[in-house]
Image (tube, rainbow, N blue to C red):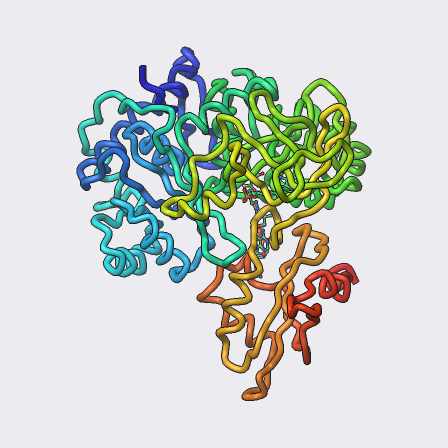
Length: 504
Ligand code: MCA
Ligand code: AMP
């Protein structure tokens, strides 16, 4: 029997021919009954461009029903979907193309010329745009004979590669299998009680695990309706909340909602569940949200490499500052640096194993081996403690990572860009509390004396090199960077020194 996630998904579709999958801000909705036919045509158009099962398809496209259909078409055809953040610059995309070696690169209409140049450089067979004008992927799909039934896949066949950056500054492709995605999706649907009566307010981007897998799979596997918004804006979210029963978001969405006076208990009256994740939800946000709406946000914890690992309960107690319990089928432990479990209540590194845990980093077997214990537990790099009941609290990070508005920024990557700028001797990048993004990317640079350094000019120089969300919100020119006796940069000292830079 095929273990293709697509077959599992379509088997759950509602039988009601009028059932809506995606409701968009303008234009007709995408009905469940239309999904398979349209995905089959896109699959056929990709095949016509030479894509065969196991090939990667890199997509850097705007959020739209067609983008979701492209993902589903890849699953259906046994292709490996590789979504990219739309904020990545051409320079960043060039790396992903050369690393993933896709059969096709699907881009936005507006990026066509640059994408073609990048595609030629990386030797990619097909560069396609998702628009519906002549010559686009959808144009070809419209004229294609739909592909046959979905391609048989085993649980350990790859479904997607999602890139995450790393402490070395080089992004790594996390390989997720059909089995990884299916197991996590089924668990979440049931754990959070999704049914066909649910209406999910979806404002997340669909190039990350949160918006693409967690949110969409819960809806697809329950036949729920999705209010599919282009992106998050408090005003548009509040306008549609009265029609929703579930909302998922990063903490910034919840703080921005709370900043809006029109966000009231009345606006949330039909919502049975608000879910937060991707970054720590401050206890004060949890409390303010409950005070305003009478509802307790359910916080969960996950990673690109493992999908969701822990969640506060749907029916039990949701405790602010904790991420709840290991999800069914997922084993989680808090361990010392050798992988030995530490006593309950003691802080250590969070590790996990289960059918949700990824198959390794694309073409990086050594890096993969480094992140797993011999008994198969994946080392998350997050510091946590577990109480006697198994409830997990994230207490910090062992990895040098900043999470800004739910997006990960690895300081090393930003430092490498800053160090390459004329006049910079060295730099250090760190995260500091930020009222909107949770953490604000912050940099200090030491001049080499060759030119006068101006923080604004430095920021301008980063524009083509780094996605906007990775660029420091502030750069400070300093005489020296604090180091310990071993010469290691003291990031903690920097975080302490600039702790109020955004909060005044
Ligand atoms: C945009 N900007 C950012 C960010 N996003 N800067 C820092 N951090 C960000 N996250 C820049 C913009 O380019 C702009 O720059 C300025 O900040 C403000 O733009 P604004 O329009 O306010 O931004 P936005 O469009 O509102 O975006 C903020 C956002 C968005 C809504 C918080 O970043 C977002 O949707 N984040 C969610 C990310 C996500 O899905 N994470 C899940 C990863 P300027 O104006 O100066 O040019 S999956 C994951 O982590 C795991 C698996 C898990 O557990 O879920
Ligand atoms: P990503 O690499 O984008 O998948 O981000 C995964 C990281 O997000 C985790 O390793 C954590 O550091 C962080 N994260 C996700 N959910 C939470 C949460 N609820 N609380 C704290 N950190 C979280």
